[in-house]
Structure formats: structure tokens, C-alpha cells
Length: 69
Image 1 (cartoon, rainbow, N blue to C red):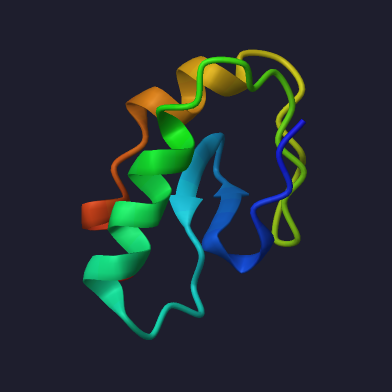
Image 2 (image 1 turned 180 degrees about the vertical axis):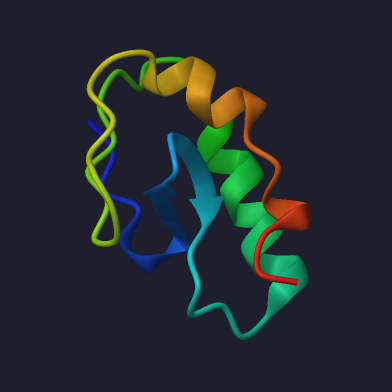
């Protein structure tokens, strides 16, 4: 189970970089490190709905570099 804080949110059926990011490059790198974790099956986000099915795949296919630009 992953609790990423404000780094990750969900919306419109996808996983997104949290909207309150100040250091963009660092946030994207942190997102990618979390997305690379092998044993994540649930992600509890503060913004949006939790990911309980397919969390690992949703994180792997996310595109934080295109969010909130």
C-alpha cells in the first residue's frame, strides 16, 4: 500500500502528478521512483479516488511530464 501524499493524484480515470508541485523536475523523478516499485497494489491519494485495482499498471503508464503544464 502506497501513501504518496500530494505527489500523486487521480482524475478522469488516470494517475496524475499532484497539482501542488513546486520543484517540477524533482517531483517527476519522485513520481517515477514510486511508479517503479514492484509491490504496490493499492495507492491512497489525497486528491481523487484511491487506486485499488491495477495500481501498478496505472502508475507505470502515467505521464507526469505532461500534467498541469
